[in-house]
Amino acid sequence: MADEVPFVDITIDEEMISEAETVLKSGRLVKGPECKALENSFANLSSTDYAVGVSNGTAALLLSMKALNIGEGDHVFVPGHTYFATVSPVLELGAEPVFVDIDPDRYTMDPDQLNKAITRVENPKAVVVTHMHGQPAEIDSILEIADEYELAVIEDAAQAHGATYNGQPVGSFGDLGCFSFYPTKNMTVGGDGGMITTNNPEFTTEIRAFRNHGRNENGKHTYLGLNHRLDEIKAAVGQKQLKHLPDWTQARRDAASQYDEKLRNVEEISTPEKYDQSTHVYHHYPILVPANDREEFRAHLDEHGIGTGIHYEYAVYQHKAVRDRVGTTSLPISEEICSRTVSLPMHPQLSEEDIRYVCKNVKGYFQ
Ligand SMILES: Cc1ncc(COP(=O)(O)O)c(C=O)c1O
Image (cartoon, rainbow, N blue to C red; front, side, top):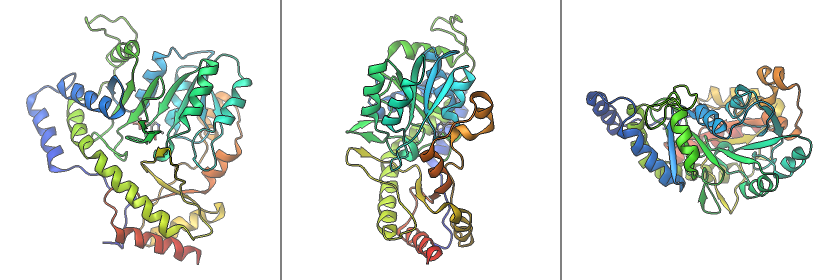
C-alpha cells in the first residue's frame, strides 16, 4: 500500500515475543546462556574468534578504546562525517580526536586524507573507521596506513551488520569491531544493545571484565569497570533477529537497486555508489539534493506521507560539545555531504509499489 511510506519499519514477530517471555519466566535475566549464544552466532556472522555482548553500540566503542588503553595525550583519527557516538567515547576517555575528511562518493574516511592528517599529529594511537550507512569503508588502504604508523584500528560497524569487503565481513578487519542493536538498526535486540568482535583473546578477557564492574572470571575486581552488560531478554530476541538478517539484508539491497534504477535520471540528485569489492547493506539510502532545496524537498515528501531522515545534519566536529574540547575544524567534503544528504525510506518491508510511489514523488518535486 503506498500512500504512506514510513522511514523505518521494525519487525518484532510472535517468535521474538515468545522468546522474551520464556526468558522472563526462566528468572535468569542477566549473565546467562542467551548472551553467550548470541555472542557465538555473531562471531560466526563476523568471521571472528570472539564476540562480546554489551549494553549498546556506544559502550562497544568505549570499551574497545579502553582495551586499547586510549587516554590522555593520545590522538585518535575519526571521520568528519559519522554519528556523534563515534567520537564521544574518545572525548570521554580524555583523548584527542583528529577529524579526517571523507571520500565524496563512498561517504567513508578517505585514506589519502588520513595519510595527510597523520603527519600533522604527535602520538597517533588509533583510527576509528565508520562503515557509513552500511557502505564498507576502504578498509584495505586504511589497514596499510595503520600498519605503517602502528595505529590500532577500530571499525565502527554500527550501521553495517553483515556487510563485506573483498568477501570478508566488516568487524573482522580491525583490532576490534563495534556494532549497535539500536531499534532502527539492520537488526535489533528489541531495545538498546551492542556487540564487539575481535580475534584478540586478551581484549576479549578485558572487555568481558570491563562490562561487568571490572570483575575477572574469579569474581575479583582486577580492572576498573562499570556496568555495560547485555540482558538475557534482549540477547534472546537478538538471536531470532539475527536469523532474519540475511533475508532482510537482501530485501534492503533489492529496494536500493530499485531506487537506483528509478532515480538514475533525476539530474538534481545523486544516489549511493556501488563498488564491486564490497557489499553495501543499506542501513540508510541517502541521496544528495541541492542544499537550498533540502527542507522544502523533505516537506514535499512529508505531505505525501513519505518519511525521510537526515544522517547527519552537521559534521561531527561542528557540535558544540566537540568544539568546546577541540576547537574548530573544517573539512569541505564532510560539510557538503551533511548540507545535502536526505535519507529515503529504507527497511525490508518496502514493496515495489512503495518504491514507485516514493520515486514518483521525488521526481515530482524536481519537475
Ligand atoms: C555510526 C554509529 N556509531 C555508533 C552508534 C551508537 O550506537 P548506540 O546507539 O547503540 O549506542 C550508532 C548508532 O546509534 C551509529 O550509527
